[in-house]
Image (cartoon, rainbow, N blue to C red):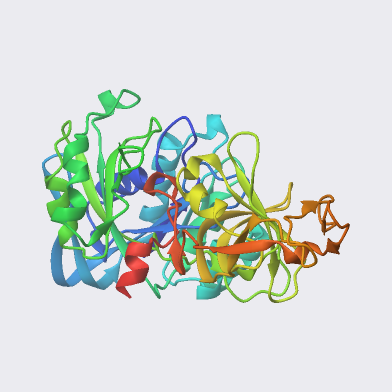
Length: 435
């Protein structure tokens, strides 16, 4: 029996992943089959709270290999590799509704949805939801097809994300260990040692997006008043409990391991005909205007896509910090690939990372030309109007100015913003280079 849920939290608090631990505790007469799944969906939807993540669990009689997958208080959580008899749907729905009503932040505009099913929805539902915007009616039709049932509160928009999480079949995947605070501490300042977070990349190289050396800030600790203490992501499942244990922090009240699509670039549309807002694209093109720093520190330039779409404004915003310095070094004619979200108004591609394919030569003026008739240094007539000799009146075009080649301060390859400016789904260069 699969059970999935979404849209239970708000900016003010709660976390859908915390509800996963409550669901496991509530259904203690059943076994957890496989790892819980944390599935991030389209990061560009206008109504998301923070990371736009849904959770899917599977319950039944566990068979096969058993492994420890978490802990609630002093009680260990185990998951099994195979399922024998599935959990009873009526029990799952009853307990699920109780938990949804208890923990969901409907008073803060959450729109929770829970889905239970013996079968998974079509995989295409996941791809439509991670890359676009899906109507609820389409999702309900798919659930009818597979015999799925729902619990919906305050409009139940969460059934869309829940169904998509259930539909996910990984092509690429990572893992995350999430730790949670004692409820009495929720909303207070977290106590997590920055030094032990900084050491993660060296001690556990399979982990990623841990520490931002630019801002000297931990990236594993959320800034919202949610129940999460910290979360560590990585490619090797067995490294994560050890990495978590290496962090000096306030007491961990519970922890759990997730299989996840974070850091995979699943949200990026690479083959497209028409660019639509509220989606993320990979666009190859030529820089067609010099980067301009605007009010607030944002850097904007125009890109002419290779595949015929109209010119795009591309933006590196102030929170991307030193990444903007890379963008400022682009010149007209450079061929690049930009990955980012297309905003509707203004129509701007917000850069998540970029690849420089080729760079044009850059030149600067080193002096006015010498008059070919009398050998005297000539004077400029005006911008782009050429030069004139004051002695003999001879004239030469603008192209006769003496130029010197300027070495480019950037090279070909990928560039990304600092850790704290990256999206959950964006694949870090650390993972890309390991492929």
